[in-house]
Length: 262
Ligand code: ZN
Image 1 (cartoon, helix red, strand yellow):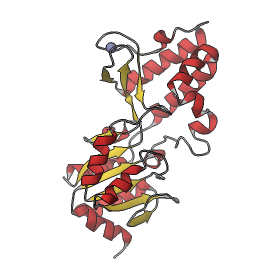
Image 2 (spheres, rainbow, N blue to C red; image 1 turned 180 degrees about the vertical axis):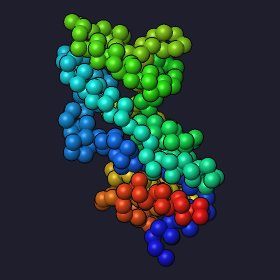
Image 3 (cartoon, protein in one colour; image 1 turned 120 degrees about the vertical axis):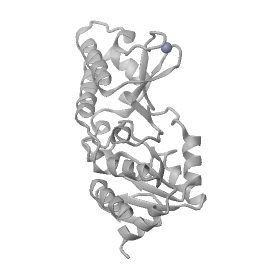
């Protein structure tokens, strides 16, 4: 039996939880943030990846922050769900996959049709109000429009007012920030993700190196709960897996799901 057939046999048993990282979105045009050429290769995450850093940059180097947001805007505008995202949505539709736990903030799983998605690092498709704390979903057009407003504000205002750069909370009208988890902030929904991982039959790990904690605990917790860990990856990883399939997620996952549903 090939590794692909062996993996298909496991997935057919159901109780699958997927755990995804940057690699699954790289094929959709989202550069993996940490790799050479990625956003954190060109913009220091200590500054651009923390909320305090961004606040400071808006005051001291607004043009550079505008460059960063313009880069983010280009990426978000171009990104479309890929074959790997769609394959996972099909697996959920077939009743075999219970949830996707993702480290990505791009919302591509939902756009591909996945319904149960736990976003450990938050989402650029949501804002959280700085005044009342309420969270609200924003669609991609609204996100791009608010990035445009912030970019223009940063490039033209002499001293930009931070509140004027941020989208408004639909509930109270206060300034709201994108609801992604910045560096140094705690991840979101970790207890729910851990309990999903602990209770699953098979954890399907896609496109993650397993070196960013605490998200990297997920495969460990799944294994402790007795799940098989099946990994789809292109390079070396730190994942302790039972079965590893080498290759790009956009090619492997559709083939795997075809085999499962055949
Ligand atoms: Zn509010």
